[in-house]
Length: 188
Image 1 (cartoon, rainbow, N blue to C red):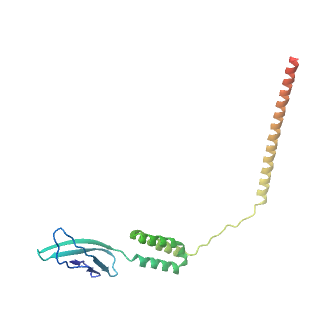
Image 2: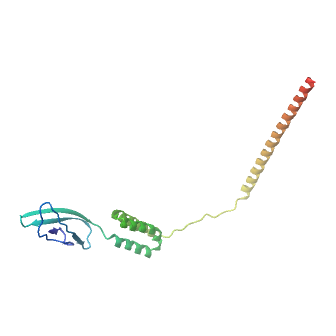
Image 3: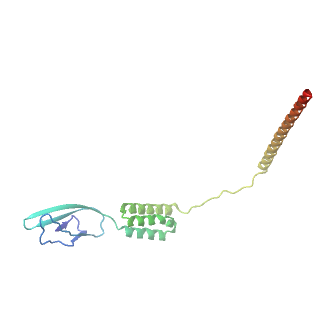
C-alpha cells in the first residue's frame, strides 16, 4: 500500500503495509497515520493498493482538511487576554471554545476564538472610557413653588368634592325623612 500527495509537508505511515494473502470477499484493516508539518488547508491524498498475483491495482482519493492546532490557538488567546486585562471580560468565549473543541466542533471552536480575538482588538482600540455623570442640581425655587401650589389646588378640589358629596347625602336623607313624614300624616 502506498499513499501520496502533492506536498512534501505531509508524511504518511501505514500500520500494516503488506498483507501476505487476501482471499476473495475478505477484508484486512490498516491505519493510515498522516502527519502534517505546520501546514493547514485542503489536500488530496491518493491511497493505492497493489496486488502481485493476479496483477491488480486499485486506488482511492481522500480529501483532507487540515485544521490549525486549536489547542495551541486557545493557549494563544488566553495569553493575549492575560497580557491585556481589558480583554479578560471575554474569557467566557474561550471557555465555550474549549467546550466546542472537546465536543469535536472544530469550526465552532475556531469561530469563537475569532470572535474573542476581534472583541479583544475592539476593547484595546476603544481606549479608556470616560463616563461623565451629569451634575445633580437642586430644584429651583420656582419649581418648588409650582409643585406646592399644584398640591394645594389638588387638595382644595378634593375637599370641595367631598363636601359637595356630603351635602348631597344629607339632602337625600332629609328628603326621604320628609317623604316618610308626609306618608305617615296621610295615613294617620
